[in-house]
Image (tube, rainbow, N blue to C red; front, side, top):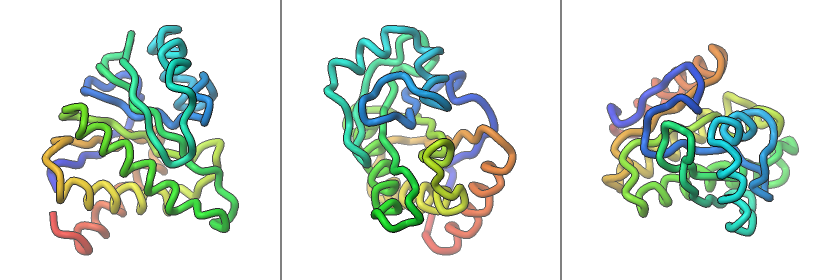
Length: 175
């Protein structure tokens, strides 16, 4: 599917309409990709997030991109991994669905996603990649926007999971 690409690198440097932030429920600056996005965007991002009243796990909110190359940041709160006993796969799927829905509703043509919940939240990266690719392909099949989705992987191991899922899922879902 040509609407989905993979990239190794820093999501804060991506020149797209929106990047997705793996946020916490308070939408306050945290660590990992969340901290990097807040640092790169500047203090205005935290101010913008304060007006949103938080974000429950699996949902998404949108702000401006401020000092980022991206015009917008879509914040979504991934689940903390509890060995799959707390509905984590469904909650992670909801993160992707809700972020993509917000992108579509806001005329976002290009969007970059990190590997949500795979850092400090401990979601197994192979399972997370499978959910990300499957959910995104299903959404794009029925929606014109976004036109392009980039999965931005911070390291080679994460990129390998996404590459494998793109091949596996291409057999499972028509492009």
